[in-house]
Image 1 (tube, rainbow, N blue to C red):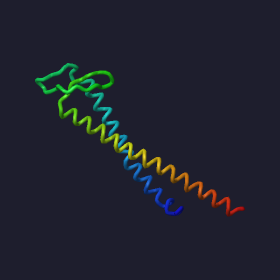
Image 2 (cartoon, one colour):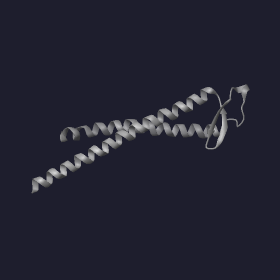
Image 3 (cartoon, helix red, strand yellow):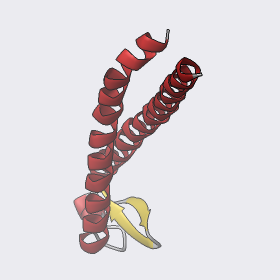
Image 4 (cartoon, rainbow, N blue to C red):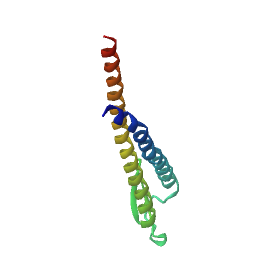
Length: 113
């Protein structure tokens, strides 16, 4: 079982990074979109341009279209989901690596005794 765990570590590390990297990238894109929205969107409803959906961005209420709202919400939730899966896999990877390392140390200590 120890060697199986040890052989699966690179695969687990790969999948952790596979989720973490796009998750972090998505969070950065989300922050850029939010900052852009806060700087450019109107602070009062603009029915002529369909900007009637309020969004609070760092204490500033801006009004956006339904499409803009869906876009930002989708990016935020998708990025957060990917990031959380990546963090979970990273924690599992670290725990298994630590266990495999300790197992190897115990084996070496017993072999020397």
